Image 1 (cartoon, helix red, strand yellow):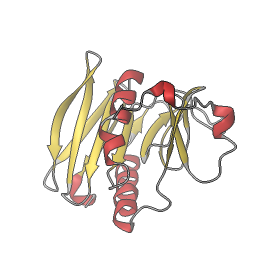
Image 2 (cartoon, helix red, strand yellow; image 1 turned 60 degrees about the vertical axis):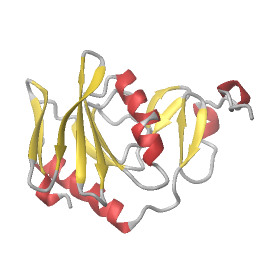
Image 3 (cartoon, helix red, strand yellow; image 1 turned 180 degrees about the vertical axis):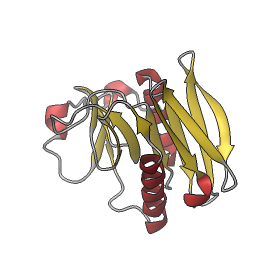
Image 4 (cartoon, helix red, strand yellow; image 1 turned 180 degrees about the horizontal axis):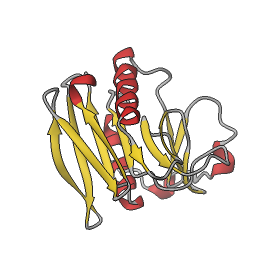
Length: 182
């Protein structure tokens, strides 16, 4: 059996994405359907991350704010994603964000886990997202990756006993006490 190649798929752009019903992501022209509704535990972890990141955010750039999905990050005309939680540092002037966020959190679910740990991780690495946190809600573990020399390096496997300070720049940081997440 022959493996599917990218050339076997139709290539889509942002103008197509805007017309679709439901929730989708578009990565390098390939559409990905999003789960209709995440489990309550998934959403609870998302909200707890948002609250903790937002509560501890210290930034001289007042445009920096923490958002939860569904919020579009339009990377280019063929790539639009909706991270579970993201820190964006740009004024809201459009229907989407266009600057690379310094921090993204993805909470794994059965329907998104493979995409989050492969496709999206490579995408975020390529786009220069400084910190990528992959959360396994059932195991209550968060893998904290930091971009070092253009590649993600696992900095910590955080559990409920841990906290971590994210130094985003000289003038911007936030912290997470993981006991508040799970």
